[in-house]
Image 1 (tube, rainbow over the protein chains, first blue to last red):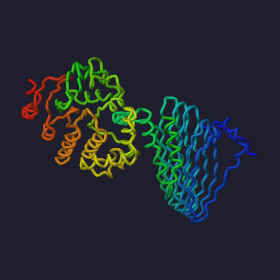
Image 2: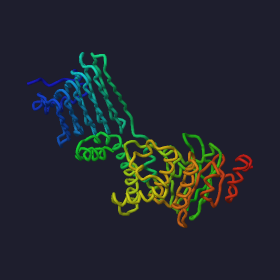
Image 3: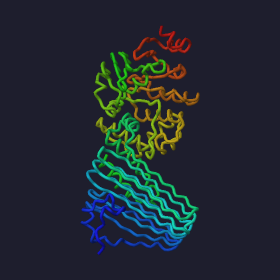
Image 4: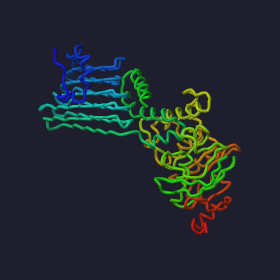
Length: 245
Length: 247
């Protein structure tokens, strides 16, 4: 079995290794998902009640396949979502994910998106809401191979810190060997807007409800692209936000 | 209904209100006019309870209740509506969601039953129609992409939905074209002209007062009321300017 990673490895730099050790034997081998040519896949990854939740997935998208992942990462102690995605000609990958953490939790989303074929596209949107002394991280590498011309990739990473002790890490990383590509990335870390809070209070919203509503506005857009009317993740995210607000 | 006595307030340590005294009985609309920097908006924010606006002396009561002791959301639940000069954008939150949650938060605080989604939408549509606003705009995020005039109209729709007893309207007329001014004025009259309600209308100009006839007009200069009179005072100010009229 593969040895437990250490924090010397870049991908585990912010990890809670002790928590990881408790589940490592079950997940040293990542789950493998193959999306065949022309096929479309949508997955919604809901959290469970475990205090440590780690998900490691290797995904391959064949030509013109598409995959859209929605994920809520809010384990009470340690939550990690690790994705290694390979995209062939014309494949399209999207990730919409939220870290919602309170207490002393460590939450991370670590992705590698490999653009291997021509004209593949990827979009990753991550929103973190962190209270207490929680740490939320996104480390996302986009690797564009030499022949992967017309790659189009976007990473948008935003974090909201609710308390002084909370930490957000954002590390978009680009490794590009082709010359005709578009790779955009943006990262922000902020706090709830005082003007918005006062406006909501002036309309009668109590402080906790006002914070929850603003946080819902910050995160809620992630779930708008879900196909079908599966609102489970939106409702779970809303109650998780209410709990940290 | 609103009684302000000897109110002193500072913003970031700087004195802005310097002994302001003003009373508005139920059933009346009072206009507050004055030059830039006189403290008009500060008064509105102090009455609304905005953080960092510090009251250093004096009192403000609303139907005998100490307004300044209440949190901002408690003031709203008590029946105060603050109309913003610059209504705030809230991306990702629809007007319908924002107003329904706000109204229900107020109703909970007053021990009243919450409105269902259907009841609320009926109320919101009716109020939007009164103000001549397309109800579909309420599906959009709060004030995002709204023009200045649309924001002010939306403020009045909010006031109609909240149905307050006391409205403090901070330059609700700024940035409005003639048609919007007329419908905002009509909205203030239809929502707030009632024996048990009162309005403090903060404005720079006479023109809103052509649509909402004030019972009293006050001039605010350097943080205190320097002159009060009937509606004719607004016309005099418009003719002569603040400096001459205050003299």
